[in-house]
Length: 320
Image (cartoon, rainbow, N blue to C red):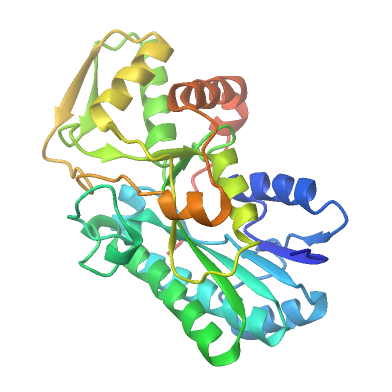
């Protein structure tokens, strides 16, 4: 399927920039529109409908979301639920009313139940409550996917719903308040090494596992998925997992930090295990991750070290 006018919400963010690059390669003649929050607040229904009607896209890639780590999710659970519900529903409605052919919604591994046999299969998405530290966010995101499916049934607008595992890579969010696990750990380990600290404190006990996919692989999956007609959730991950303890060890090795890692078990572990079954994505549109984890981790680390002066100038952004 060929698209002529493509709108990408969240196109200025970490994942969005890679998606924009991939879209430009696959659809070189298409007009790409990348609205920014300063000129389009997707939480406002009337503004969203007006904007989409003016641009008239035939494909929408819906990436915009409120994102953050465990701490930020625990501090602002209502904000994570409300903002993600509103952004998702308004994007779908604006797309439908503008006559969009297809919308690709980006969901999250956080929507899966806290306790679930791994690898996670899409049909188990609603079999339990998510990990409570980010439950409101996870529920909001899978509710948006259900709304997209309902809109297809009632109005006929095609949709694809992707469940994205933990992303990482060059250009990741390294701000203290909103960073996810890999950027947070890289900053912590680098700081400890440079300050000659003998140990660093890690949350939990190190046993939880995570499935990480490099951001460029995720972007390729998103763009490839726009070519299929399949509305039920589809996992996007690496197909492999790593424990948080081993993740610390790898980052310490890359950074050259030889101090002790002290595990603070009074802090939450988060979800015990995250590993996605990616066989459906492999079958439907040939998805195969290309960047191995150790290579991707080194690329991420090197990017941070090259850009840390600019990164450290960024003040944390709080939303209430």
